[in-house]
Image (cartoon, rainbow, N blue to C red):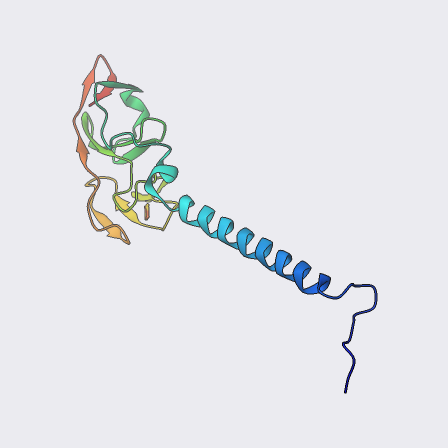
Length: 152
Ligand code: FES
C-alpha cells in the first residue's frame, strides 16, 4: 500500500490546477498571436482601408515634370503610379496590388514592388512580372493640365 504523495510546498490538487490555468493562458496567447498574423495579411489592414483601387474623382498629382521621361513615379498616398514612356505621354495605374490590396512601396528598374508578398509589376504597362498576383494593375485615366498631372 502506498500513501498518496504530495509535492513539497503544494497542497494536493493545487499544482495541476495551476498548470491547467497556465496552459490555458499560453493557448489563448497563441490564438491571439495567430489572429494578429492573419489580420496583417488581410486586404483591409494591408491597404489601410477599403478604399477603391482607382480614385473616384480627379486627383491633382503635381508637376508633370516630376515623372521622368522613360521612367515612372509612385504616388503612394494617392495609391497611383504614373509612367512616362515618351515626352508628354503619361500612363497611370492603381498602385494597389491586385493580390490582396497592399500599396506598392517602391519602383526599381521599372518594376513596382509589393511589400506584402513580393509581387512585381511593370509600371509602364501594369502587367504582372512575378506573383502571387495574377491580374495587372488597373489603368487609371490621366491627363496633363497646365503642366500638372490630373488622374481619375
Ligand atoms: S498583396 Fe500580396 S503580393 Fe501584393
